Length: 450
Image (cartoon, rainbow, N blue to C red; front, side):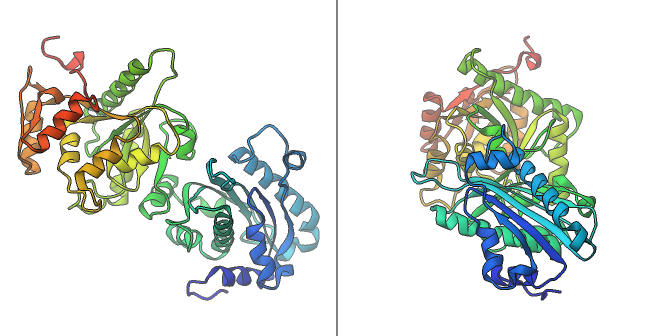
């Protein structure tokens, strides 16, 4: 058994090599053979490595794993995993099966190209047995690579791959300990894990939604995606080249009436952007946005059960959800703009606009001006949803914010009716006049004069 202390990559690979019951194969595409290399150089590789292959050429890869899929995709990863696992068992199960826990490690990666113009990401998979002859378990990950060069990215993949194999055999006590071991030494600065899928009897008791949310709360990912229908996928697959509407909020009230309000808010924003783009353009993608951080600076971060409760309620209303690690709107802008150059629109109530102006932004050198500059930098606008005057008055009292005045029409306040005392009021007025903040009308269904 390995030591209970946290091992580095060298000692993890060596521990696996020295365990006579663990034996498997490696297939790596796109960033060298960095995972297999660790096992080959630390010593004792013959005790672990059955085969290592890099089907780097596309024709070679198609001949082995089949054509018809993108090379860096879940479909290609699954094909690699199925092929390598079948071949491993066919060749070795009779001779080694009774005393061996087999594994197959595969990855297909797009590391940074020479000009730095591609999306540096990859899919990583592991199939393994915990007992000789036992049912196989699968771990599938999608990663984003953050290092500035392909050499550093390859190095990080090597560390992550060793971590994954080691964690699968030695760190399965809890999902938290498993993910912590997988992420050791490469997360935050070097690699993001924004998607994980676990299959097999070992993981039957692990809740999938909790696992995804933990990726964000533990700092392993900037954002994860929860679909209201269909399969869970990495955020890039729902954001790529799309016009996007984001509806951020706390969403603490989850009754049927509030669910209708939330659904109407997002639907209004999507329709507004569709009108802006024209009917010939494809429909924008819309998402509710929550944060795993505290919603305001002085509050604690939400507990996992409460966070999942709010996510489930939004999914039940028919809306897809993006869970962000950070709460600031400009961080949401930065993330979405990784994957699209199309328009991005926030649909927000007046309370969230006021909060954006009143936050201190002490982590930014330029404070509010820098925050707003980042927020509106790349084709971003606010659709400002109107608010009942009574609700606005009560909310301002609850947060002890002063300096805001308004007029109302039939009990409703729109962004054009909202004013802030100078000098901040000049900035608010500029954003309104420049259409960075675009007022929305009171929905006909809610108007008393309809």
